[in-house]
Image (tube, rainbow, N blue to C red; front, side, top):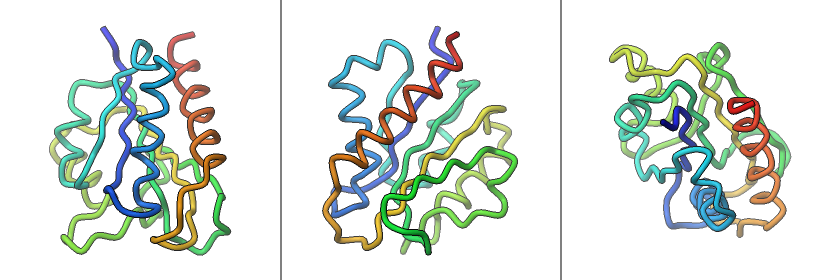
Length: 145
């Protein structure tokens, strides 16, 4: 049984598609044999997607104050101080993870791999996808070793 899931958060628009592009690349590489892979359209879907896994890796584009291309690795214990995602629907990634914790479906091992994209309409750079794919592969390798 696979105990790890990698979830790409995003939408079909601009740089926000980064999480989905990483999931696409992982599927193309045959990575779905090592971990379940899923797309998340709305952060409100996260509590359901997290259920039943001991390790979850979330992949998302970030709009913060770092340089475009900066990779941020946030573990469960430091998520409270991070502002993850902005949503016009009133539910962002941080809020969804807080809800998952209240519902007791937040896994013990949770990692957010967020990459700063600079601007929302910026095209996704291929090196961003490659960097995130390598980061996901390394994290899952730590789980299955």
